[in-house]
Image (tube, rainbow, N blue to C red; front, side):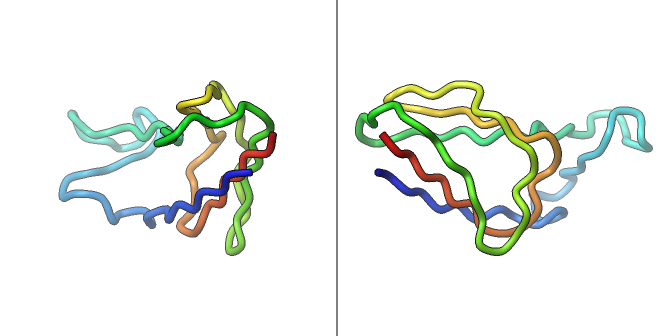
Length: 92
C-alpha cells in the first residue's frame, strides 16, 4: 500500500495575475482557466490496484481516476478543490 499527502493551495494564492473562473464570467483576455486535474508521478513502480482519495479536513469533490499506471496517475475533479489536505492511497 502507498499513501501520498498533498496540500491544496487556497484560491488566490497563485502567481500575480493568475485568475480562474467559468469562461465568459467577467474574465479578461489572457486569463487562465483552471483545469481541476491532479497529476501524480511515482518515483518507483507501483502495483496497479485501487486508488482511494480522502481528506481529513475537507469534503473531497466528485472525482474520477482518468489514467492509472505503475508510474503515474491522472485524477479529474468535477469542481475546484478546496484548500486542505488530500490523502491518496493505492491498494493492491
